[in-house]
Image 1 (spheres, rainbow, N blue to C red):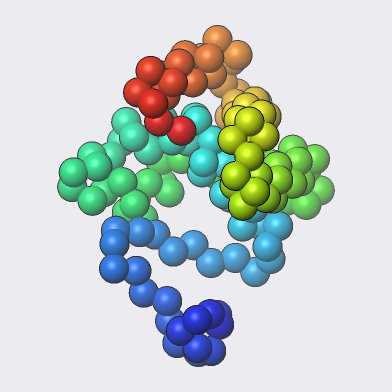
Image 2 (cartoon, rainbow, N blue to C red; image 1 turned 90 degrees about the vertical axis):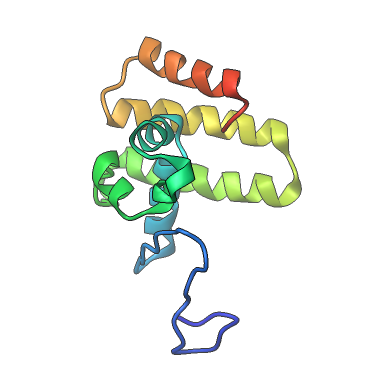
Length: 133
């Protein structure tokens, strides 16, 4: 991986973080969409303790059940595309656009994980009450 640190030099985080490599950008966007969805964030927050640094530890990947990206699965492609749109909305400072994209990602993620609409609504309400997401 090449970056500001120069080709061949590894990127090392100084914070608690998990580095997940991907071969293709579309796979990374699929993963980002699911990891930033309300259902995944709920699992991570319930499973981890922020004060211990475990929030960004690799073990959170074991509890989120993110499937391997498959370009033959329409919902995988939709999630990847929504992630791209979310990144663009953030770059433009479009909070309203981002909220709509996040809602679409949540709906698709809930379907992928067989979470009912009422369960998803409950998860989203918790985040809206805490001011997170």
